[in-house]
Length: 255
Image 1 (tube, helix red, strand yellow):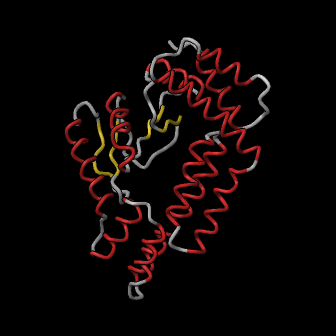
Image 2 (image 1 turned 180 degrees about the vertical axis):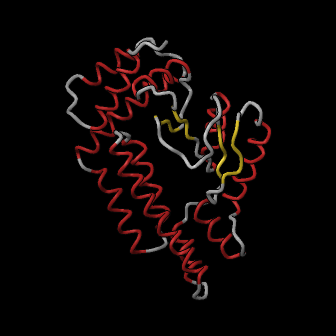
Image 3 (image 1 turned 30 degrees about the vertical axis):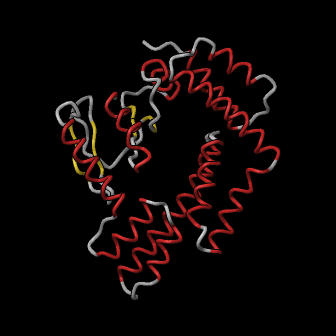
């Protein structure tokens, strides 16, 4: 876990997605408590009992590296494969930056789509291609990626992470600014954060993120009191529920 968390911290902005999976039967509250008390610097995505398309584990710890194209590149005990994991991460992040595929065109499209998050620019390249299987495949890929970005905003709101959702909405606008029809829809997503209710949720979430930063910096003496104070008088919302879940995790004892 320390190396996975380090990888996430160092390479997240370059395109690495790190998923930590609890596979020993603990519930989400226990998992959250364990992470905050043992690995407070963790910023990776965590989940319980979610199946991933990787070979079954023969022991703990178990890890896998999945490439940009969905191919399993390596799986096994990370303690025995740390050098190989580092090599593969570097290799795949280079693909994110420069693109990948069987043709120069597909590489250019993916470099814009994944490396620069330029949805409009990627689609412009696709539309300049001759009709055929490659054009149809890349067009679908761009559309799915843009759709996923929109869904991510809704999912972050559902999780009570309004600050991150707002950041994604701003990024979506930037990604679509060269295409009028997409830009209009992206601006609507961003405009949703201008309501009084959304502004209040953003303000509350910023305070919660401040508490989380204190926890990660191991300055957590007053974290429980701070969260309890934030929740007093706060209306029911996904953001308040997230603060409550964090407070519960801090109160939970971990063996």
